[in-house]
Amino acid sequence: MRRFITRTTVALALGLGLTLGLAALLGGEAPSAQASLSARSMLAPQPLTTDPAFNALGVPAAADVSVIFNEPISLASVTSRTFVVHGSLSPVFTGTYSLSGLSRTVTLDPARSFFPGERIEAVATTGVRNTAGELATSAVVWHFWAATRGGTGFFVLSSTVGPAGETRSMALGDLDRDGDLDLAVGGSGNPGGQNVVYLNEGGVQGGTPGTFGAISHTVGSGDDMTLSLALGDLDEDGDLDLVAGNFFGQSAIYLNDGDGTFDTISHTVGPGDGRARSLALGDVDGDGDLDLAVGNWNRHNVVYLNDGDGNPFDTITHTVGPGDDISEAVALGDVDGDGDLDLVVGNEEQQNRIYLNDGDGTFDTISRTVGPVNDFTYGLALGDLDGDGDLDLVVGNMGQSAVYLNDGDGTFDTTSYNVGTSIDEVLGVALGDLDGDGDLDLVTANDGPNVVYLNDGGGHPFDTTTHVVDPVSDNTWDVALGDIDGDGDLDLAVGNWVGQDVVYLNREAEVYLPLVMGEAEGLVLSADRRSVVKGLVLRDD
Image (tube, rainbow, N blue to C red; front, top):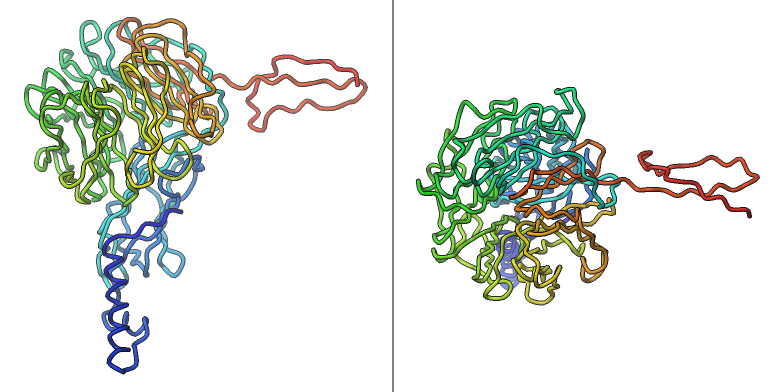
């Protein structure tokens, strides 16, 4: 579990201490802490710890999600609006809420499992009340990652997807709610200008899991020049909606009709002349719904707060940054461990920046720089790379890419490592546990062969095991990770500018088993029963 202390918690503790000390100085009997608490029915509830912990890795697929408060909570106040769990690959989680531990532990038992490797965002809002009816004084928002099963991090080409031509963005998610991952593709020119959703042929489709193409739906006008896509349950109706970040035209929100089509309701977001380069969804104001961060070209970056009504992003906006950045990448995560989501911005030939959340979805007070002043950054990813519980940063550059390890307070000054070579042209990055060993590995989308870096668990996470995904270069702009074929490990979808988009399946372990002559020993596969017996080695001992 992760423990965090808010300013209000400190103030309450100090106030109680001063009361006890003053009574002693005046010669009277100091009231007990219990008596002081009884003087006003209760202190307002404070979240103390979470389970799973902040940024935990390898969380079981069927795990409960809990927040522990400092005093008893009213179960009637715990609802799908006040304690909310979102998935990166699936819509908002429903389930059963309960209390335990003297009614101080609030728990959601989700009705469905997390997808392998899915990043989960959990939020306990200020709508949670104690048994006296007092509202929590602060929200808590945190991320954790679901476990994967097996895999090697080596990939085998499985299938191609769609026509060849100019894909700039990809996103995986269960768009038709049938339990497998579908693929959304954003194009930036002809013939790839049309954004398309491809439904996985497994699940209710009845075909081969992990293949796409038999059923597809177009999204948008076809000439939007969509440079970024984001999936999330924006209206919390139980399906994933789609945000298209457009460079030429106005960016748009497409609400899912429930079956993976997006025909009925759409909304615009941002100015009419576009300039959106990157998107990230997350609950930046701690109210339980997903907000939108947009990285723009040569203008202010913008955070749009979800108002929960109709067009979710039409009423409350905040600008971020100086207004002349060319921001090619944005990422949301709690880098300073205070229970809200901060914003990382990757810029083109300008210094990358971290904007710390003021706690209400504004980013005005504290900003920090990271990396050299002239990085040409196209990809960002946040994750706990060294297993110390805080979020580290991967920066994918046209040039030398790098990993910056978090000092624990949202600064990245002490430890950094180069990734790849100084002549690489990295256009996108993705993190996930590719080999099932419990830590986060890295895939880079390159103008050249794409590369896998397996985390070795040491100081520099990506300095020992690297290999190319495919020696063929199709000028890849984006990659997405998810269990596409439903076998428990993370597969890879690759969005190409030149050739067709491609799906690569994670290769299972190959086991060489000895046969001891003269003994009737059984041959045992790996525990998951999915490894392949490649050959037998005879030895006479």
